[in-house]
Image (cartoon, rainbow, N blue to C red):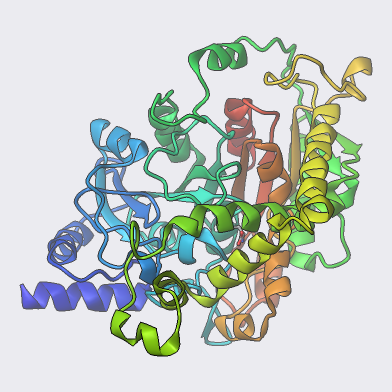
Length: 483
Ligand code: GLN
């Protein structure tokens, strides 16, 4: 047992993708992992799945990488976990994340940071976040696939940085029952795997209505989605938003993106420039709305009804701090405390109108931008904003880079300000605000490009495909075309 524990610790330390838990379950898990690693874990037959540690499992602790949930084990499985087990997948580990999903590098974790298997100049790279643990497990072949959560890009960004496929389905298709909330109106369970085919198989097993989740799309809307009329020919119209062509785009991201578009064009598909004017406001909108929802969601961790109580409640009278303040100060990490303060501020009566309400309005404009360019109607709306659709100029999918740059090293991450780190999400948050399906597919660098990068072993760049709400199957089909 001791050596199994040691092995597990060593394995997890080298990868640092698995959350360290005390107690016996991880030891057993370690033994299981060791046994499994003798086989090819990427083989479909095993169907091993790692689960981000903000999705509850009844046989493994769930901490959301937060001190406030240290030692917590859920009495039930999340619906997505239940469905995985029901379909014969084996759940082999819980994976590291930025605390409660807040971050872009998987560094804000009570279990310590996760490192990308890839490096530059001998320094390991950021795996992206917040589902970095799940992405690294897949990239390193420790599990066949993994679940993550994507609130503003947390599945797609780590997928792009680790050379894996990361899919965020339309909001409401996969159940959130048992997913620890960060920002309810944006939180989506996502899937990471090595191929689009594997992602699609898992997606079809999880894409079920769940009456325990009030935001799960009911059968009536699922039916409307499947009968949404569209006259799609075998030739796709691929939208290229001019607003994503920013100067900060890394040259290798630009060339992988251009190559993907050329590939689609040479296969007979049409490339159509489009405009999504509100894109520029999407990032700041997201960083008003997500912390506002987070500050409200996290209010329940008071150390009385919910969450780990302060280690030293006796010191309270002297310090004159309420129990919950001490508990929350100790239990939450720095980034989570920053988001709570930001959210509490934008929701306060004096700033509500200027920030929260404005951000909700901009969110609506982001959604309208998308509705105006897609040929397919939004099945959630009765009216369609048909700026392009009316004259047959609507697009079937939108293709963009997943992130503006290649992953930075963990040393560079330490120098980044919070705002610089939020910039990683600039291409992923628009789909989140609109609840659209989006997938990041790794595009291999060509030899000359890879030669330019001899200091690093990174070999791919993430390209993102977005579709109209409910058009998940089409997004997956186009992803197959470019992988
Ligand atoms: N990086 C974003 C944030 O910190 C997205 C996180 C996510 O999708 N969970 O909010």
